[in-house]
Every structure is written in structure tokens, then in C-alpha cells.
Length: 103
Image 1 (cartoon, helix red, strand yellow):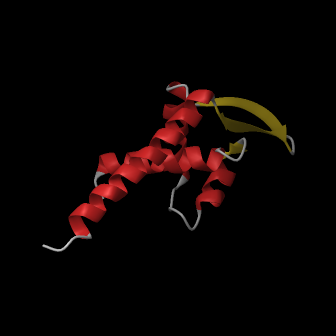
Image 2 (cartoon, rainbow, N blue to C red):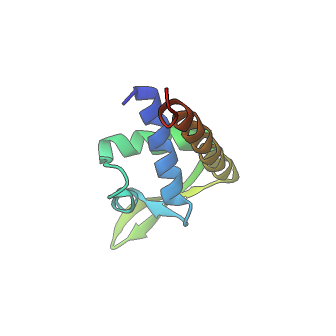
């Protein structure tokens, strides 16, 4: 898969995983199992990039005596997720025209 396409797909998956409410890294990975395989070494740079772009907000909270970083969508993150949904529909339409038609 093309690197740029995969980057967009991974961003969309992470935003989707957070659309149900705040979460943390390991849970995001677990929530995406069966959708896409993503490792911690792939996830955390995505989270950092999305946070830097204003799509996520983060905070640290204590869990069983340890600090855990939680992530949540911002309004910008919700807008980006909706844009990915629109892009998906556009791409499906293009693929159907290319591969679904008779030639």
C-alpha cells in the first residue's frame, strides 16, 4: 500500500477509535484489532502528530499508581474524521467507476 495512503488510513483509524470517547494507547491498539494492525511504535508518532495538528487533546492521569496518557478528539479532530468519511465515499465512487464497470 502506498505510504501516503496508509498514513491517511492510520490517521482515520486512530481518530475513529477516539470518536467514542477518550482513551489511551494500549486500548486504542486493542480497539483497532480486527480493523488494522498497528503497533505502539507506529501509534505514538501518529498520536503526537495529531495532537500537534490540534486534532487531539491529551492529559496524564494516574492508573494503579502509574501515569497514563489519555487522548481525546477536539473539534478539529472531529472535523478531520468527517473529512476522512467524505474522502472514503469519493474514493469508493472512483474505484467503482474504474474497477466496477465493463471495459
